[in-house]
Length: 116
Image (cartoon, rainbow, N blue to C red; front, side, top):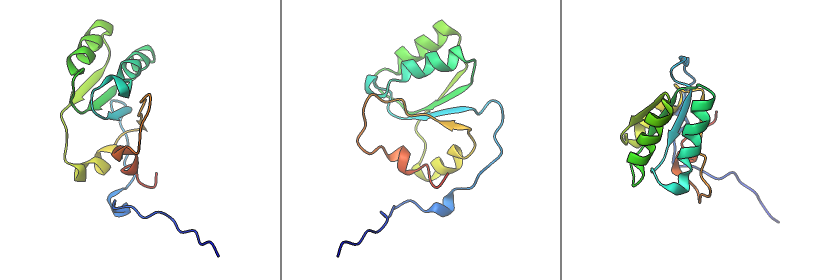
């Protein structure tokens, strides 16, 4: 007999609660700043749609991303890494979480999305 059971997660679902979002907290990206993560396309899309974007992380292309934001005059806020325990609360304040990577394994940020 084959039994199926849901995968358990080390993430407590109790950390998540839906919050009211404000206009300036529209798009969120949390990831290393590398070419694999395709964040230049994300910045261009947010700029074309005139939507505010918050990017959290650091990495080898951080200055390239900031140069692109200046070139496009895009509404992008860069934040440094935050403790994992704060991520669910932060995510609940945004309308959309975007992970535009070209490829991924099992990114931690997806497991932190919770039941939403």
